[in-house]
Length: 164
Image 1 (tube, rainbow, N blue to C red):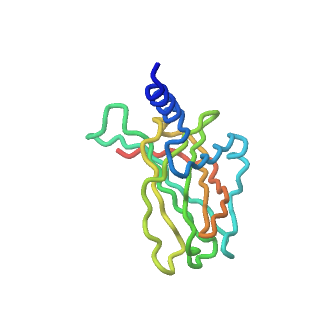
Image 2: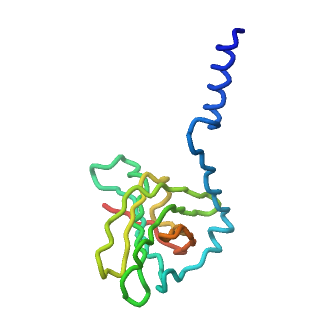
Image 3: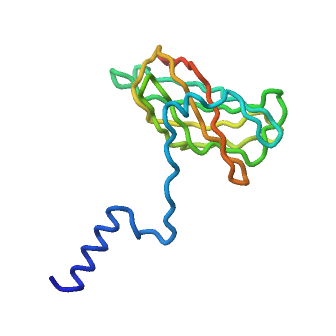
């Protein structure tokens, strides 16, 4: 095989494995285990504020939905426990929903701007599994501060609601 063709196939193999295709490759963060997710605290203190997760998890069964309903959506509300302003620079980077021994690793797709002085930040995850409705799940988020530190925050036993 000609050297140019060999180099081409070697570079294609490297790209398909994710090696050498980016100028600054970054190793992905490890996905936490179910045990680690379930052990996450229900409050964390960041930037001097104690925060808790108040999610709303639901599936849409309105008449325009498919017969088996739409995929799960969760609104992730993180709020200060004392009603003070939400800390500047804190955001939700990752989210997981745990049902029994199953885990949905969700992409945080939307971010609502935190209003100055508001005690809450809000994010949305979409296109989840079709669990429930009427079953309980644990919702876990990874919070990231402006200096790059991260913390897990959990809301256990959240009921998957049904919209009609």
